[in-house]
Image (cartoon, rainbow, N blue to C red; front, side, top):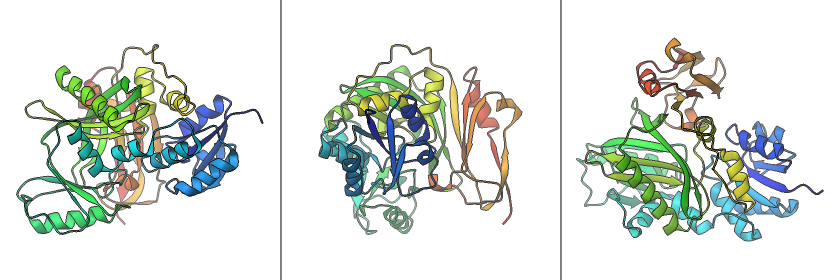
Length: 394
């Protein structure tokens, strides 16, 4: 067989665009995760049942097929395994050390301190016993160091008891058994994807980040491009991200960026994930800018250069995560007429009559809507009348 073989970790709806691109390029695609019913596996040439976080098992799959490249798409937990296998087999890819610095939140904060960047006050814990010097009258965000999809995150303030409860909740989602308590930075937030090549950002498009406030979970529900922050704040975000990836040694690949801008205009980097954003972020970015993340990620996996010379003027757009505010029986969604013409893609993870839970993490996501706007008025229209999830009482 003369086809080049690509091992893709994950076969969920988020990995499907990459698998489809790889097949269109004539590659022999092997997919791998522990969910045989995932839709991407039906598109691949072969599927192997092994968890994407089981490094040794995935390495055995890679050796069996004598792969030419390995990658993933929009998956935090799979990235360390990609790096582990790439290093073991001397394939193109990030180093495991660099990936761990970016994906484990306590290590990431130390990395930022090493790089001399703005860092919120933070504490690392492996149990619910709070440090004596923590000010429980302040607002904090409590996070597992290694969870994905906003699972285990809460906003806490008021008492040491509530903060301890938030820590216990975060630890329950951490594979490493660690969490961080982090100062809450009051201000606006931006989010989006970028691509690193040779330690430099060759592409980025960030938008305003909106959150679900019905619980204390502080979970994103929408990103709306372009961002409304100042040019100076955006330049600071990009400069800091480049310093972070250079300090970590992550020289090539996609990054998912989250940053907050405080009341004085100072930018704080919240996350630089060494992967594309979930909820079809790379797909809407291609629609709005022309940058093809699926092609770029595959090219990078084979050690090839990535180009972005053909980008058009960036368009306004948004994604909106469909979610329930209370438990109920899912009966459909309603898209207001004011934004219906700008909706170009909708994907549902739930079916009518499924039970849905209040939104506390990506595992409760009902679906995703993608919009291409004619102007930034889309931002306002989504705020005024977003898509509505219809439910009936249990």
